[in-house]
Length: 357
Image 1 (cartoon, rainbow, N blue to C red):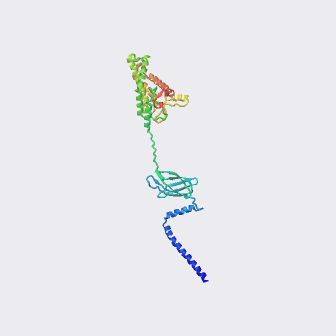
Image 2: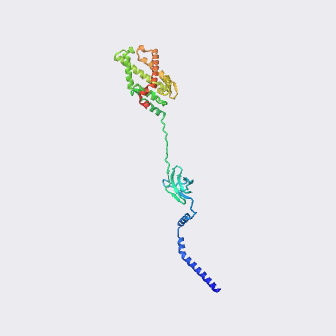
Image 3: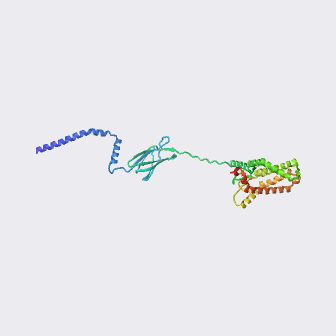
């Protein structure tokens, strides 16, 4: 009995001694294990977890820091991820940092903030990935200013009148008093006088007056003027005076006082009958500076006033109220013919200004 007990005690002692020796041998290894960094230990743990059967993570992490072009962080930026496996959103923290846990897959990453240009990229992550997105920089939006420049009515009228004073039939005969702009700006009184003066002294109009005086001399019209150079000079002077008084009174003085537009407005549309009626009617109605149609006192009274003034220089036998009335009526008829020509014929032969466009 005692022998067996001694043997049992001896075995226990040997096992205790082996355990102590074994612990002594492992102490240096334990000491070295205590010196491993927490980060390495966490990485090893994650690696072990990823390698463990059935323990593989099912998500990935996407993170980054949002900054502006000056390198300053952009707080509270909006972060969105959109992909086939889902959509995620978050806001950056006060220091511009964000982190999103997402399912593995490919995503369109968009980062935005007020008054800054959105930043986008594409990112693909797998299970367990820990992906930091570099270079997230938001630029300042360009400031686009739209300036609406509107010409004043006076400036617009100046430009349009300038175009009209370039209009010439066959490139020579002035055709100033026609507007091919349906809603032309009203002319100022000064512009009316300027156009009437330029029209009166235009060299081509002076030449036409000279030709008309030659025809009158050949036909012995106004015989009281006589013949020869003296007779021609009187006829030529009378023709110039007729044109001048008609232009200045009917094209400037009365339109300025009555606030009426001395121009003919080309229509160019509608039936032939309606255009004929419109052209003839412009002898008796005209557009006011207010844009409304009204009786054409300027043209009608201008013709009769010019005829009355001609009594001062026409031969004695061609003077009198009856001749004045007849001449005024004849001028109105010629005005209607001229309006018909402007509406149907002369535009195609007029060059320069709006007619040439």
